[in-house]
Image (cartoon, rainbow, N blue to C red; front, side, top):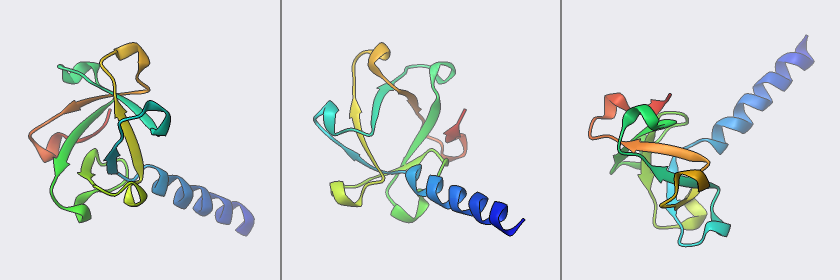
Length: 103
C-alpha cells in the first residue's frame, strides 16, 4: 500500500512541474515544448489563458501564464503558429482571470 501511495505522489509531483505556466516565447519551432495556435473563439480552444504580470500567480493547470524573458526559467517554451493544423495546443486569450483554465 505504501508503494502505491509513493508512486501516486511521485507521479503527481512530476507532472505538476511539467504543466506549470511560466512561459517563454521562442522563435524556433524546434525549441518549443508546445506549438500554440491562438483561436478567435473560446469554443475552439483547449485552454483559456489569462496573462499575468505576477510570477506567483502562474500555477499548474490554471491557464494563468507569466511570460518570462529567460528560457531557463520557463516551464514551457512555446512557438506560435499561424496554422491550426500544426498546433498541439489551441488557446484563447481572455481578459478575465476567472475564465482561465483547461477545458
